[in-house]
Image (cartoon, rainbow, N blue to C red; front, side):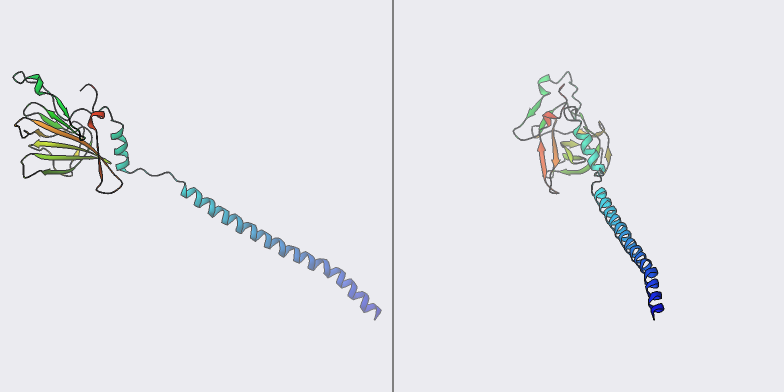
Length: 205
């Protein structure tokens, strides 16, 4: 009896530390799994933050808008202002109106040219008049040429700066005159803000 009791104590002494060691290994594996899971969650969170902070990709429209804005104060007039000897110099002037836009009186047959690269957005007539309104789009900006005849472009055409788009038509007084405007697109699709062309035209004019 005493011998069996002694053997039982020895076995308990031997097996006890082994079982404790097994429990320690299990706890270590559990802690390791928790640590890996935490790092995985942190990695996913970090990835989401990085993805959220990616810079905005500029569209072609954004780039065209920035390029057009950079031309502020440096745009040339859309007409050739060649003074003919038989026409008084007083006929060649710019009329500034209370509303944004300028009317440019010029020589008969003067060529109308695009002030900057863009796309022909629309061409239409007002009140069934033969004279046309040509609108060019430059990203979020638009240039409007009102009083054009013999148009040399069509809707959808890509235009380069100084490219001919037509000829100056006669106004209601029978004088060659072009009304020029600059618009900027607003937040809403059809919203347009009319800008003062004077601050966009190069000062030599």
